[in-house]
Image (cartoon, rainbow, N blue to C red; front, side, top):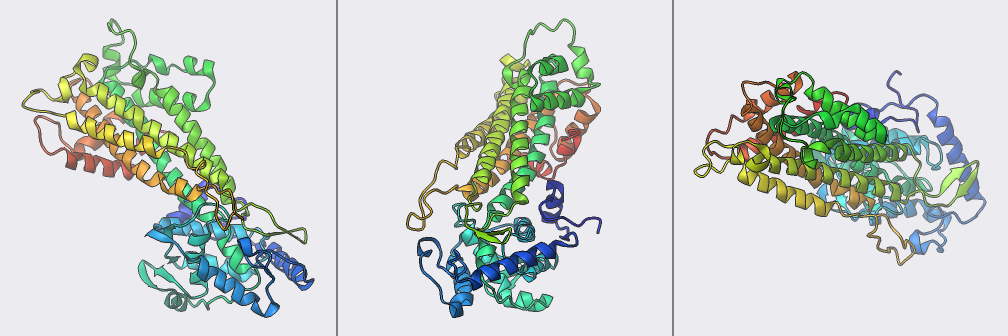
Length: 501
C-alpha cells in the first residue's frame, strides 16, 4: 500500500490529492487502536458512571441521565436536531476533505467508535458519495456541529448526497454502493459531529488556492518590475541574509530567478537616473516574504489539525476524559493569518498597477495607451483593483475575536473558525482578479519596452497574457480580458512559472 496513510501522519500534499479525487487508503493495523478504544468505552459505560454525550444529554443538558434503552435514540436524535445548517452547499472537493479528515481522526483510536464507522466514511469518499453540507451554522466550538451533523445523517440513511455528481436521497446513495445504514452505538453520533473537520477542510482548501495565487503574485510582480524598468538590486541576497526572515529570502530568490537573463534589465543597469524604486517594487521581498511566512505558519497549524483527534470525550489509556479539543481556535487563527496574507498580496499588487498607469512614476504612456484622452486605457482597471483591494482589506478583519456564547452559556467562548475560513473564498477570488489586472498592465508595459525582451520565464508569462488578450492599441471592452486572464490565474498557468512555489 504505497499511498496508504497512517492516521496522524497525513501530509498536506496527500490531503490535497484526496480533495482533488484520489482515493483514501489507511495503512494496515489502524483497527486495533479503534477496537481497543471502543472496548474501553463499553467498559466505562457498563460501570454506570456518567459519561458526557454517551449516557447524558448534551451541552446544558449534560446533567440529564439517559436510560440504557434510550442510548441509541440519543445518538440519532443528536444528528437530527443538530442538522440545522443553512446557506450554500460546500463544494465537493471540500466535502471530500471533510470525509477524509473525519475518518483519519476517528482512526486514531481515541474516540470510542467501532471500526465500521471509519470504514463507512472511507467508503463514502472512495465511492464518490458526498453528503450535502450547508456551509453556514458552525461557530467552531464543540466542533463544527451543524455541518458535521449533515454529513453524519447520510451514514444513517437520512439527508441527501451527491452520488457521483447527482443529488439523491441518502438512502438511495447507500443502496447504490451496498452500504447498509449505520445503527449508531454509544457516542458514535457525538464522535461524528464533534470535531474541527469542516473548518479545517475549508481552511485547507483556501491554503491550497492561496498558495497558487501567491506563486502567481511573484510572477506578476516580476513582470511589472520589468515593465517599469525597475532595479533588481533590492533583490540582492546579501540584503536579505542580513535580516534573516525566511520568507523574504525565498521571495527575493524567486524574483531574481524570474528576472535572470532579461535584456530589459540589462538595458538600464548603467546610467539610470533613478536612485530608488517606490516601495511596491523595492519592498516586494519584504511584503510578500511576510505573506509567505504567514502562509507557512498557517500550513503548519492546519497540518497538525488535520491529523488531530478533536471530538469529546476521548478514550485515553482506558479512561474516558472530557476536554475541549473541539475548540477550533487554532484553525481560526490560521484562517485570520491567511486573510492578512491574501489582503496584503493584493494590496501591493494594486499599488504596482497604480505605478504602471502613472506616467510621472513609470515613464510610460499615461494609462498604458498611446493616444490618451480619446482612449482611457487601464484607468478603470486600476479602479477595479482598488475596489477589490478595499474589499479584501475589510474581509481581513480578525474573526477569532468575534466570540458569542452559545448553548445557554455552557459554550461561552467560541472560535468562529468556520466563518473565518469561509470568508477566505471571496478573498482569493478577488485576489485572482487583481493579479489578472496586474498581469495585463505589466504585459502592456513590457510591450512598450520592445524590441527588448525579458527573461524566458517572464516572456512565457507575457505570452500567456497575449494568448487571451491582445495589446491595448485603443479602447475596447476591458472586462473580457480581465476574465480571460483571471481564468488562467485560477487554473495555475502562471504559478507554474514561479519556480519552487
